[in-house]
Length: 358
Image (cartoon, rainbow, N blue to C red; front, side):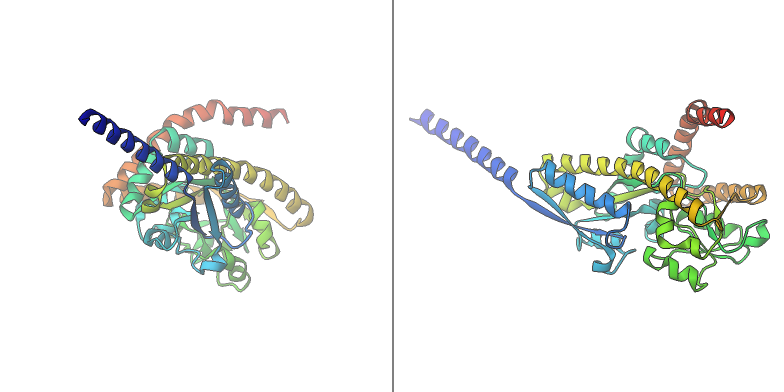
């Protein structure tokens, strides 16, 4: 009789556990995502939409994501705080926007003179970058995941041609992140302005120059109507956006939905990189045909030398001020050295060969 009771209790426990897991598996979740971008913002906004669609399809409707753009939540540069506090479950933005709150976050977007997109993704997923990023964000009740890459960004739109370091003195420019600090070292007055305010700021001379992304997004904002000089990039060779997730919300999701989230974020990130390449090529062809006033320029060697020296100085200072920053910088520089050696005999060699053939 006792054996039968014990068996019955065990069967009941197993059945209860199974029923609970089945019920959990059937639970539905809706996550609210705040993005820095305005409604229907091209490429960046397409990335969050693709992510939401993929999550819902892969989960058979058990997990849905509701996106609030900047016009809804009214805080384009407040995504970090809103996700940290739980006001939103997720965010889509760029890590270097939070350097004033957590200086080490800026290393996970793009670094001047650093890795290209392929090298940086390899660092994230195979070179320890993800682990370092989680180490920075977890104390703030968040997880951060790569959220889409623009590839090499253009160096910015300038009203006047830049011929020397003297031309940069006192110049007011929208340029965020570590690049803004580098430019400040050589005389520029950098500022960060929300995307929706950039055109007006340039038009009204609030700023003298603006760095945004590349032809696809720059063309839509109309900078080519105001500034004639378009400079090639150096500052953001692989600009990675981010998905932020409130950790308490993440921990409440079943394991299968967490994995669906990981796959959907990684897929959306890849899609954004190839979408950026395609859209930039199309937009540049448009600019060349319709806006012959636009001149592609490269900063003079004098300026590059000064910026490179300033960049190294700032990296040393950052490493001295923070053990975490030192660990990230060391990881990135070591990985870049190894990865770039192969890039030089593969991608660079191919492009150089094609330039000679053509």
